[in-house]
Amino acid sequence: MNQNLYSYPAGKIVKMKRLCNSLAWILFLLDHVASGVGSDKLSVSVMEGDSVIFHTDVKTNQQEDIKWYFSDTRIAQISGDLSLICTDVQCNEGTERFRDRLKLDHQTGSLTIMNITNTDSGDYKLKIIGSTSSSEKTFNVIVKSVPAAEQDEVKTNKGESVTLDFGEIKKPNDVMTWFFKDTLIARITGDLNKTCTDVQCKDDAERFRDRVMVNQTGSLTITNTRTTDSGLYTLQISSFSITRVKRFSVTVFDSGLSSAAVAGIVVVVLLAAAAVITGLIYIYCRSKRYRRAPQHVNGVNKDVALSDTGHP
Image (cartoon, rainbow, N blue to C red):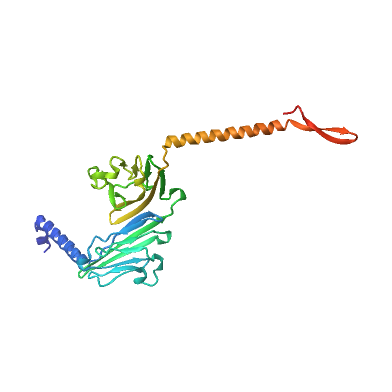
């Protein structure tokens, strides 16, 4: 028997091993597909006050039930036939923390958290349950406080330039899209051929023609600002299945004067103030040089004209 085994062609033994390995791999895949359970975890850092969108990458017409959890508490759910749609306290009475700040996309089941706060940091779990399979995905969210010097309210004078900077370095996979109100005005990706500004992005962005620039960090610069540039600017930063949203409120003032003229007026006012202060100091110092000299008349003191004390 051993002799027959050793005499068995080596090439056939190798083929049999490969066949066995292939069968084992196929069985593993079948078991994995049958259970339909996969796991994934994505992390994202956002600034306090921003919004974040978690994408499911599915459509509800595929009959999946989509459930969202925060720290094991259900905060949103939508069924494939739309018979059940709920968020926050509609799903669970113990979810007061998100009142009026959750938005559920009825087409995809994607979840948006608006005006995010420090207490919203943690793990958000997505469960997609279908008729033949199910999957899970976890989003880890870290909310950072915004320093007072980095508030998103920007003010400038007409004719000046303004830069809207979200304060981070663009990552290679980030797609950054800028909107003015609801108009697309700039987009930057890792592919320079897909980067656009102004009318390159959308025909109705004429108002910014040749005045909008974006750099590789994703910051947006508007040159020669006008009062019509005042309004809400929205930056969407998309990476994998997460979109962060940052908003900038911009106000452009029309002082009626150019920046140079305003600077000239300020200089004149400062010079005039300095001249007034110098005159008052001179008068005060001169008055200190004189005092009334007392005179004795019949034993009674009487003041006479001021006499120079000789001291400055």
